[in-house]
Length: 136
Image (cartoon, rainbow, N blue to C red; front, top):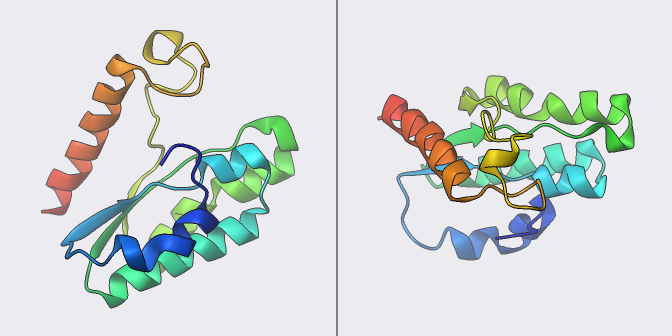
């Protein structure tokens, strides 16, 4: 969902997972970084999402995000390690940066400079496809 945060997903996770899934790609957190939400809160929410999915025998791939420097380098450093830390802790496949090849490239983004355009979504789709095929 556009504008979704990790806490927003936590609030509706049980509803989202009512359907039977073999696997999920957890790609949440970008809006947390844009809003300056404490990285500890984001990490706790992501960890809970992972635990809930795993408790339902759902395979999890985690897709990383990186924070802008808007809130300083300490914030960025703390945020940017969330995804790799959780990947290691829970032995999850990691997509290091979901927007690799798209972020900060105007030709692949809408005029807001943040959301991918049609070409950008194809690149992201290929990144996801590769991760899914590696996980099969």
